[in-house]
Length: 397
Picture 1 (tube, rainbow, N blue to C red):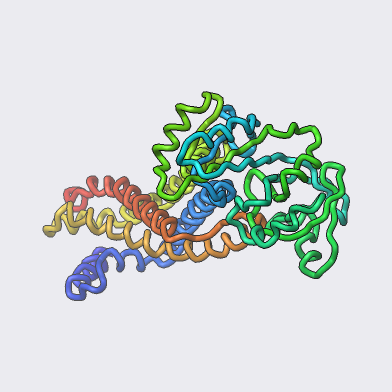
Picture 2 (tube, rainbow, N blue to C red):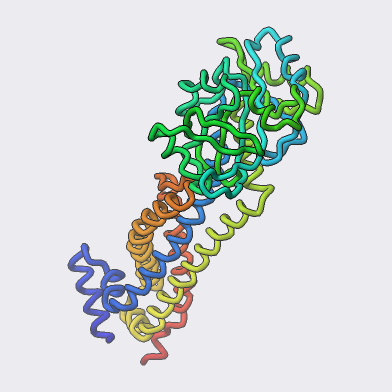
């Protein structure tokens, strides 16, 4: 065994393309396969948890991103789209007093029951209502269907809603007349748009403000949920926002569009258990990988302790041996990352098809998990090399 290790060192010095660390890892192929599988499993855990967390944030702000306006007004008691509080639209129209404001647009939103026209099973759906004279949503399918929204009891259906709502999009695209019961009122689907399911809503409808108030006959006209403000070209968004905050009462929260997006994201990140759970899952994946790599490297050092002591006796320094172990950790990180990354792509597609959530691989996420994998392996290596201090030549000779 000692002769084999010394031979590996000699071979690695004469062939710099094959370092000692690689020769050590590949000598026990079963152990190497276990290490790669363990790191890959830890990477998959991290990929899935980070992927779901990012899908959580992204899916819940797609509506916010689609709004065509620079400043957003909401009730100061509102926490997120899930729990909006209404306010008087007079507060919104009061913003027209500022010279930089070009137009204001109220939006109603609320959850209600949609009855699957095939099975009759009810399911909660999110409904948006606005004046279709001006398009407020930068969403595929909305601009070309504004005239449809002016008709009584007509809605646009989100083609990316979950299948539990029924084959609405399929039937409409086949030219069939699609009707359904929403809050015990018969409505007609006049067109399709694309927004997508989120953690807050499995399906979405867009309709006119008049139709919205017909569906929600308990809602009072003029009590809106969101106010969209468009500014004149060249207006300073930050300055106008500050002016509105001073001009409007404290019950109104004045936000730029970017702040409105961040407002929703922060709610899901800090005010719900979901964001914490996904972050905790990522940490657990990191810990699992660290433990697995530590066990592999520790066993590697323990099995060759006598050989390492021999190398010390013939002149190799402690730092050289530490470098070998850390190189092994780096090699394990890179090799173990590849199957984890590949399998995560298939898992993302399966999750996307099953949940309709935007679970996609991104360059930033791929780099983040790679860095976490390297840190994970280096931490394991740093802990495992402590065993080398006990490799005393005096114990061998």
